[in-house]
Amino acid sequence: MSVKNFAIYTILLLLAACASMGTPDGGPYDEASPVFLTSTPQANALNVKENKVVLEFDEFVKLQNAYEKIVVSPPQIQQPEIKVNGKRITVELFDTLKPSTTYTIDFNDAIVDNNEGNPLEAFSFVFSTGDNVDTLGVSGTVLDASDLEPIKGMLVGLHSDHSDSAFMKKPFERISRTDSRGRFAMRGVAPGKYRIYALADANGNYRFDQKSEKIAYLDSLVVPFSTPAWRNDTVWHDSITIDTIKRVHYMRLRPDDIVLRAFSVPMKQQYIVKNPRDKHNIFKLFFAEPLDTLPQVRGLDFESSDAFVVERNATNDTLTYWLKDSLIYYRDTLTVEVTYLAPDSMENYVPHSDTLRLVPRKSREKILAEEKKLFEESEKEFLKSARRRKDYDKDNPPKYIPPTPKLDVKSRSGFSMDVNNDFKIYFEEPVSSIDTAAIHLYQVIDSVQHPIPYVFRQSPDNIREYIIYAEWRPEKEYKLAIDSAAFRGLYGHASDRFEQTLKFRSLDEYSTLRLNIPGTGNRAVVELLNNSGLPVASQKTENNRCTFFFVAPGKYYMRLFMDDNGNGKWDSGNYENKQQPEEVCYYPRMIELRAMFEYDQDDWNINLAPNHQKPLAITKQKPDRERVKRNRNAERKFK
View (cartoon, one colour):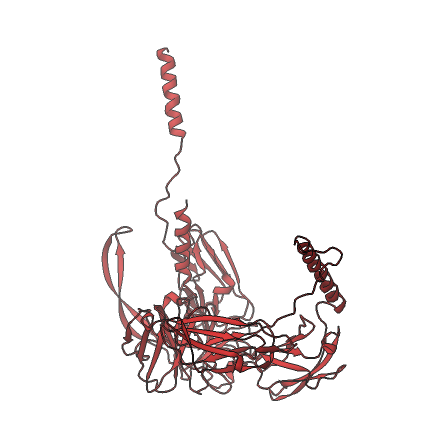
């Protein structure tokens, strides 16, 4: 190769090397939020006449869920128009500006940078149409009263009118909206005394005029004020090195720790949601609300006296009607009149009647055709099997006799039993007769069965379930034996013989948890929660104490509610009756229980920490900011 050609070749290699770009590894993500630079009018401007606000930032920005997050106060009847153009945001108000009024445009965290989506959190813009700007404010948290979940997007408002009717008849005077943590911050508030409310405003009129809307309120008045305070501001030399920490003076707006517990008013409504007849002999009535009394069901085209066996579900809002007589249930259409109690326009419960046509999913003809086909197929298989036997006589073949239907006895328990449980059996249809002499319970000792006494009763929650109560002992083995025909079902089917061996676990496999909760007396219900925040056990306090026995080892959380009316369940509030929902409190930490241990938990002081300190691990509504970072890091991991 000549020197000239070698030089050209070398140059080409260098050019190729320069043109070959490696895949960049990214580097750290931009975590900086957009910076507000200037505006027209200026922030905190006085005597503003124009209804248009233009904001400018140091980088290209965009808005996320603008009409959900951005709130203008005082509230606007006509929705403002909000536009984004590069580094500029324009807000145009269409309502006539009120004289001598402080206006606040609360952006919440809707403003984010264009590339990484970093939000400018808690950003508000303030101006006044008068000679001064109101500078007070209030802030706090809105939580779901039943489980202390932060509520996102809840409207929070103030009324200087202290009458109870103002919340229902007048729009709010100042408003804010909660963020993903349930937090709200209301600015531009004038000195005075206010009522504060939270509202899931379904129709956007800033007042509580629909009973289905979720609400919250404080019993006491809110008086905004400010106090001098100091905070530490960190100046960074770079992304990992602190330059200086400055102590900065500011005015703290208070109260800033308001907790509003939101609830839905129980609606007085009752109606039949649906009435399926999945099988000929069964129809169901699904009601909108639980029933206090059974409805009256009258057959309009059949004799309905003593025609049904009625089964309730656990929540008492679904009834199953088992038709007894085949001459009735084989009919393809039944017409019934159902009379039940339902609220009238004054919310007084009065009898209400519905006429229902009950049509099964399959006609009688189709069922008979399916049964005939099944019989023919079974008969064919029977004869095919019979021909393989040596004693088969083709001139006198065996006759196929279909098996007699049986009433299956089913168990809800396995071999291993918890010591605080009883043995349960259930059936696919109601039982019409029971021979208790055919039920035998034994304790097995050295392979020898010793009869022991027991009590056999129908479950109070399910007419097709039965419970066997006995003096069960840990680590002992038992055998349940039920003779054939011990039970006969509603449709005449008899049960087969049933046997099951069961053994109760050792006490060494459990924990005991003892709690002392001052101030609860005999009126709190304590719930033990799993890692998903769902209750697995509950106990009522007695003299400020309660104990959970036979707890499986594991990690748990705890919640209690003050059962003020003693009905054993949490009750919501009622604004018209000025009734707050029953208070709920969470134990602030997870507890881990180990086998063979008895835990005497330290005093659970429900008044020491704010009652909204629900453990983050079981809080379902996570802050948006944390979710953005987590998702971004997950994306980066696989790039």
